[in-house]
Length: 351
Image (cartoon, rainbow, N blue to C red; front, side, top):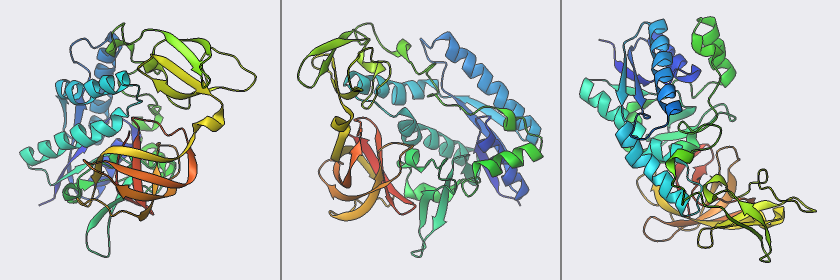
């Protein structure tokens, strides 16, 4: 009897090719798609995006001749992801909802569905790899394509679940994935990749906030001089340069977000650098906290490399990171992911 696997499908090339590869390996494959956008108050463009998602994923499943199911998880998404996004934004942070969604919602839903319906594995199109170490334990590692590696967003996975997960495209480059889709005539090969968060349009999510949250306020330099007016703190992030609406002899960047004064603090680029950070909500794939003084590397944003640093546990799932070299724009609310070489050790939320 062939093993059964359920593939989380987005309609994109990675998840579609993942399903195809599993078919080729002899698995009995079904597709599943979680719809997150029909919550109360969702704007029209999200309702339209939800219908488009169903159409695209259904088409991909039909091309592969596999069963496909769509499950509405909008209520859970709103409660677990969007509420946190709003609350953290109100505190002046720049939250990372994708990391939270993967940690608290998407994989738990998929694993629960698989267990309930008799599937052996859950597969996704993420560019990560599961590798068995010399200790015979499974480890989550970076994908082969360094430009597409998505391990940063998966620091919240549980070690006990790795044996039930499979990432078929993690050992491939993106070009190889596209080549397979093209050779098989899959429509996903011609679809553009999504760049925005799933619930925003044009980089903005105004509908989530009240008018009070979007109250304009002063843009202030580090000496306290008022240089202009911002349009609402949720529209800005540490390190931002464009869209400030102020002029100066040298380029100005957002250095900090001061929620107490409803102020945007700006300064020159050298003011963005710091050598350490504190993070909360620490999670480690081994299930055990790391030791003080551990030499590791850490990424403070998805597109940045991992830099050498020293780890120190604090209290209540908090920890600190001391980098060997100063890092640019360490941003509260973003993920810090911790690595030993290509192996993902865990991470937390920058505080």
